[in-house]
Image (tube, rainbow, N blue to C red; front, side, top):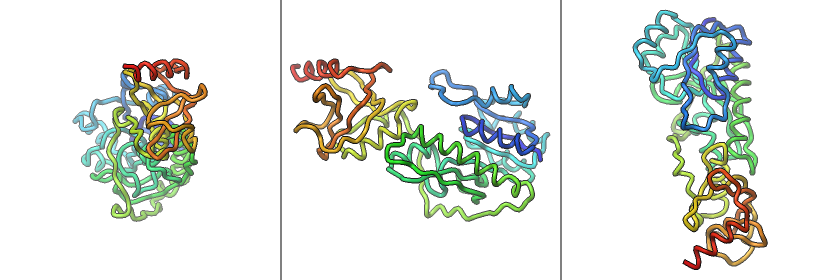
Length: 303
C-alpha cells in the first residue's frame, strides 16, 4: 500500500507512525514550516521524516502546481491528511486511486471546521473524540470510516483534551487501516444537518467578559489555557492572563465583576455572583503575586 500523507502537529506525528507500523509505503509527506511567531509546543512531522528517511516537502500552498505534478507521478493508492492546516484541493484528492481520508478532532458531524477541541471545551461538552472520514471538496463532510470517543472531564483544559484526542486518533487509524487497505472499510453517513461548523479562533477571542456567569468564564479559560494564548483581562492598565484556575463557587465577598484579591488569594468575580479561584495569574508570561495585583487594583481605584 502506497500513500501520500499531509501531516502536522502531534496527531500528524502519531498517525504517520501508525502508517509506518502497519507497513504502509509513505511515498511523500507534505507538512508545514513552523511559524516563528507561534509557540511550538507540539512534535515535529519534519523531524520524524528526517529520522525515518521519508521524503517531505513544505510548500506554502497545497495548490502549488509542482506538488500536483509530484503526487501525480507517484499515483498513490491513498492520500491521508492528519492535522494538515490547509484545505487540500479537489484536484489533488482525485489523484488518490482508492480514496483520500482525513483525521478530524471531533465526533463528526459535530464540530466541523477549525480547532474543534477548543470549541468543544468552550461549549462545556463532556465528550469529544477523533473521526477518520473521506475527504471531499467541502470540509469535514465526507463519509465516516471510524470514530473513537474520549471524555472531557469538568476541569480538563483543551491541552489535556487534545492529548486524549491524539491517542484516539492513533487508535482510530490503527483499527481502521486493515479494512481500509482491503477495501472493506464501512462508509457511515455524516449527516451535516445534525452537526455544527466553527471557524478558527484568534487570541483576541480569549478576552474575558466578567459579566458572564462563572461557568462560561471557566470554560473560556479551559478552552484557551496555556500553551494556547490564554484567557485574558485588562485591569489597571495591565494585561493579565489566567494560567491556572478552578471554579470557587460563591464569590468570597460582595465585590463587582473582575479581578479581586481576598485574603492574599486572587479571584475572578463573575456576573452571577460566583467566582474563579485563580491559582496562577500571568503578566508577560511571569506569575503575578496577590500583593502585586492588590497594589495595581488599589492604584486603579485611586485614579
